[in-house]
Length: 388
Ligand SMILES: Cc1cc2nc3c(=O)[nH]c(=O)nc-3n(C[C@H](O)[C@H](O)[C@H](O)COP(=O)(O)OP(=O)(O)OC[C@H]3O[C@@H](n4cnc5c(N)ncnc54)[C@H](O)[C@@H]3O)c2cc1C
Image 1 (cartoon, rainbow, N blue to C red):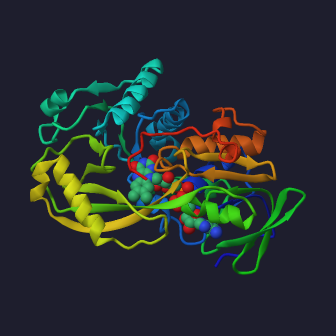
Image 2: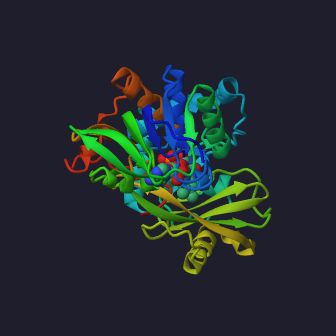
């Protein structure tokens, strides 16, 4: 176990992709005195370890789209900045709408994207059947397709952020769960670890992913971020459909399908709000049923492995970035609700600005403030890759 410092200007809780990106951008701004406390080991647990690395521009709110665009700039020049190839797979994203309500969400999204000059195609069922004849379309109202979206290597990105942040002076302290805080005058003065150590801090960042609600509760704050279990299943090599096709998100079932090497990944149903990692038999059966219903030729596919990860979800499926007035130096950066990988560079930049410059220049983050829940000022995002 590493020797813990007595004081650090910034203590970040969690070394998933969000904590690591924040640490990196802080060091880029010249702030070297950063300690990242991680309960487990870097990349070994948490949402980032289960992540597929997708980045899309199809969101129903301008702020979610902006976060994707800011991050996409970083991912596109990642090799120059970090010397690491994230191996982009330009598969595109296809959302399928079955009900009028889903279609309205898709249309609103496409209208918003057009005002932002972003390419998106609204497709009739017949147009989709022509392009991707393996999809069953007779029960659909339509779909929306973005060809420039795709997938990056999430663990490669995480490792690159960590490596560069370390080079900039940040300490990553693994196997050090945070178990409490010392609080005085509406400030978190220090962070207590399980080993009985306390690190004094000027600023504390809660980047604890699916655990962020629990970590906030340790500081006496009610932050509605909960773990939402998601099943994924991997098939044996499957060549009855083309090698390259968009990730297909069935908005009605909440299931999705994407190419992964010679096989496929089938995104199954979401389950209970818990940290259980068990793969449920029912989830496997339901994934097979929904996948075959949408892509009938999958009847010939064989599932070889299943696993479960956890999204860190908020009630409106938008992130939480900022501090509560009752604990002004405790910055939350969490609640990405399935989009945290693709929004990590934007979040890293913005939180570093908040800490070093006192305000976020890159984007107005007022809509993401943690108090919006108790103020009942939510900004709902219906374009998710799951149903909760
Ligand atoms: C199956 C699946 C697929 C996904 N696919 C995509 C995708 O394609 N595109 C996309 O953008 N997003 C995707 N996501 C979402 C994305 O993975 C998350 O939004 C993102 O990884 C969140 O990162 P994080 O750093 O906030 O959380 P995490 O990666 O969970 O990191 C939090 C860290 O905090 C640590 N921690 C917790 N409590 C404490 C404590 N008390 N003390 C110290 N450390 C603590 C944990 O050990 C953990 O390492 C997916 C998620 C899942 C589950």
